[in-house]
Image (tube, rainbow, N blue to C red; front, side, top):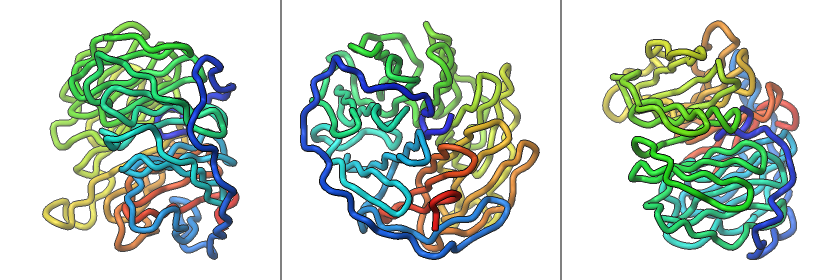
Length: 331
């Protein structure tokens, strides 16, 4: 899917939740500079400041003309090419429990779980008033398809489903999830200690597909192709039945100590195009057969997430409040 948490499905925002909050202020134009890096992992712009000195923990791009970026403290920003606009706070304190706390399926529909037991929706202009799910205990991630299906998992392993009007649960996940990617309402993949599959009714028990590291992120292009990345710099590929063994991608420098190069994000809009980023500021490209070596696009900064709307447009974000763009509109 194009967006980091399974986006790419269009549709209008739900009309059943009441929109509140402050509308986005006028757009700030911040033109990117000349393309800095061009190699097998694509051509990338120099960093564009979204909000200086603040870690950006999530990015979701359902289309090349719309990306939503969120900070660890729950502030959100719309990023389109060289333009940045604040969309305001995603809900209320405390700050988001997990990095992948929001996802968008179109420019007029995003969903977020920024609070312990609250969910909010974005209608293209502003975030809705929070909806409280009393049984939830610390939401960490969310995945959506269109406007009538979202699923979220909390820190206790409780899963809850949104049907376009209201939330219901518990549908019994097995543990917290760092990220969820959904292709349809009957196929989602959640990752953390191990992968867990959603079939529309239940979650499978996570298996020990990756004994070498923690699974940090996942992206599914179809029910038969997903890629998960881990803290040891490995990728695991889902073929519709099972995962491959962990394959080293971020091999240099050594995977130890302060120089450890964990893969922090991945996005696969198609089975023959993926981009992954790591904690050393590098991006890696997949062409359907193999992964490229890491290209340094953000030296001195950890890249924390990436979302590719199409094979022609990706946005990566870092721990210093900056975004980098690849493809159309990146220069």
